[in-house]
Image 1 (tube, rainbow, N blue to C red):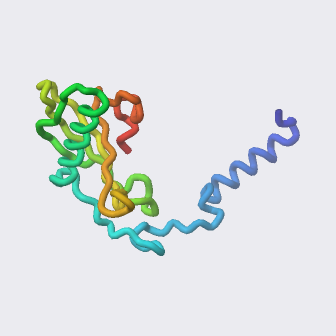
Image 2 (cartoon, rainbow, N blue to C red; image 1 turned 45 degrees about the vertical axis):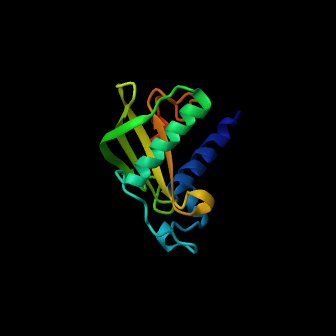
Image 3 (cartoon, rainbow, N blue to C red; image 1 turned 180 degrees about the vertical axis):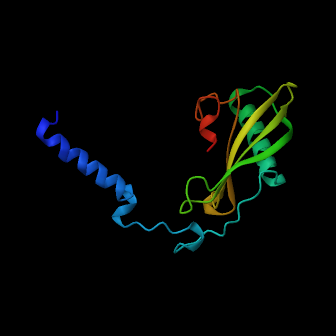
Length: 151
């Protein structure tokens, strides 16, 4: 417990920390990812890129067949739209956040939320995709209801 006479000192320290800009005041420069020592090219595929959608489709099919044995597959995508780009900050790995409607072979449309990141492919080449289909986050990695897959 903080003693009563030390409370104003603690409060003043917190105010100074916040006014100084928080943790970045320690001197870490906020250099955009495209101008860092090992720069990113800002080459993140768009949400409706066929390679991105095919990767989601094939990985969903593979995981449903191998781990869950459901036979579910994605038949198509609709209403694909971007909901964020570089929302984590200019000095982080460039990411594009997207949502779309997916049609499964159960004939019930679902929402898929996904993030496309630059240089997050195999051993750091290409792009990486993290995705979550509402109702199929069985391990609750992006719980609740895929919210953590969105910015």
